[in-house]
Image (cartoon, rainbow, N blue to C red):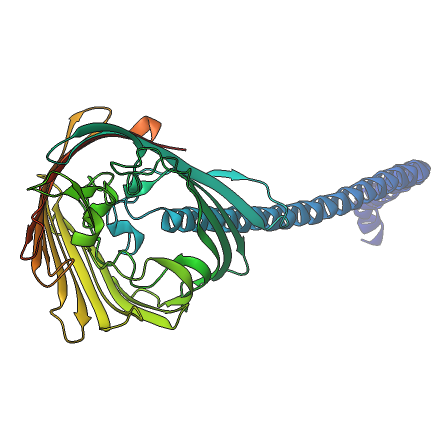
Length: 469
């Protein structure tokens, strides 16, 4: 039995020995390949380390690029902001220059209302901004106009032709400097000089040629703040000046409430003898339009709802104050002003004046009214009333055409026994591209006297042009 079992176990034993031999042979083969595998692993490990170094270098470069890009973007943003601030600053300076040049123009050049009434109507002005010697923050604007006319005057006996500079807005040049102190405060200067040979308000029958007029209209310094208002020092508009001349008709180049600018020095002629009297047109008509341009210290408040106040202390112990308003809406533009002043005159107290104007934008129809009064002691008050009806229309592509008729009534001028009236018709053609106007006027002056002598009427026909620069 035991021999038989041994024979049965022999195949198992042989198989086991065979497997062991195969295993030993495979192990011997693997042992021969191990160095080669180790070398392969080392090479791959080296390649991985090299690739990792490259990745680390690329990552560092990317971080540096990101940092540089961020710095560039921040610098670019700062530069954009700086340029934006600079543009805003220059824009504000240009707007201030335009406003100050606009304020420096004569009331007629800005159609009277826009001098003080929130710019309810704007007339073309041309500002040339140049460099100045006041530093890089100071801007200088130069502007002005030439205003020449031919007049035919009839005094009831003689008819003469006059070649004049139109005193409604005499030829002039202005220099306006501005410097922005901060975002709210602007320092300004204005020098405005008239150069008006043979000015219309001074020639008469005895002097058809007058001395050339070279007059300093404005020499002033201003501090302008939207928050606190505007301070003026020097020669310029008093607070009450032009408050009687708010006018949206756009015929003010030749016709507005101060009618004596056209031919104020012309002499009335004695109706009976035909001789010239010593009485002039400006003595029979006076708009009492404030204290004119004087050496003064003036303050204007900021605007509130279109309103603002102004007051000034004027040389020779004079003072004045005024209220202004301007607005636009419901198809209308409108402006108004009222003022009082102490003219420091003998036998007189206070002077009062005011005006208002309204324009219907669609039809161009407009109405302007003005009054003035001098309160006198022991005498009747001197008074002046002015009314104008106008029509503004664009018939030609070159610019608007304006027509107007007006009526003036004066009481107790030049004496308590005198009353005068004047009627006029005017037309003005705008040439927008050239900053020019061509105008015509017919005006009649009549004076009814309760004392001798009676005088003839004076008629004046004016044709002229104003060219801005």
